[in-house]
Amino acid sequence: MLNEKSVLLVMTNMPDAASAQNLAESLVTQKLAACVNILAPCQSIYYWHNKLEHSSEIPLLIKSNQANYQALEAAIVKAHPYELPEIITINVDGGLPRYLQWVDTQLSA
Image (cartoon, rainbow, N blue to C red; front, side, top):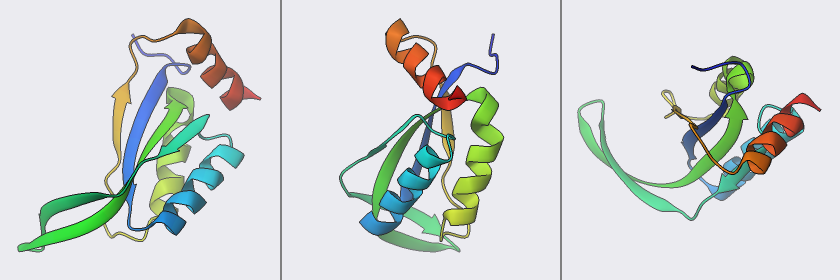
């Protein structure tokens, strides 16, 4: 059962390193994320407006919790240059208890 302290892994992609860095720093300083991993660039292939697209993107792995999710989503949408940003959440069902406690502590500080 999820509660407001349930840890979430939120994934999104940014179009370049600068926007990824800016979003990551903003989310952590606003206490919407305990930690953001900025991953290596990847290639994304998808259809957009009936056209096959090929894009280089920077994936972000964002550690947050259920209580902060709505504000986190709003912050991503506001900062994101895409018309429809990818925002996917994964409920964290387990993990190192001390790490999960650290996430909670960072978000409630």
